[in-house]
Image (cartoon, rainbow, N blue to C red; front, side, top):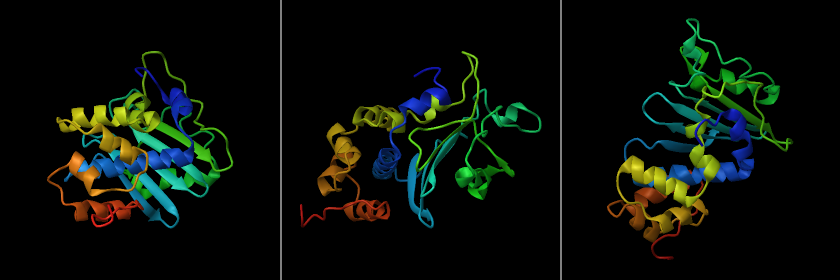
Length: 225
């Protein structure tokens, strides 16, 4: 996926409901595997009727995907990309980044949670109103050697396969990760003690189950399984 920019991302993103399902699954997997600072999170009811998926790699790069009744608003910030607003002394978005953003979702670019020093830090922006049939972005243009971060920030949610998550997790956590357990969660199966034990044998199932329920996940209690 090297060299991919936001324009390539548009065609690789799944339908909104599937994107939301993948984001929830990846957040649950991260919660099971990472006690302290999960890279991917999901907040059910971040605002009234609005869910939020987020990624923060702890190195200054992050994304947020807002699931609203009006549609989906996705943005990412790759601090080392050519599109960083910090390339200009006064900070400026890459030309065209937000052009065409519909009014129904535009307020998210002003949300305090997505502002840094009173500026919407973003190198990638994508949106899709509920009635729309395709993902959209602004009329941004990039030279072949220019990048905006879309090539790596959204690869997990765009791919959506258990293999992609296993590859990420084994590299990130530097240990083997059970593919079958990952596949069960990626498929949306209820959480079981067996799944948690396969991924993190030392974890307390009740603790993970409570986190899963916060995500709206079905949990199969030990007595039921």
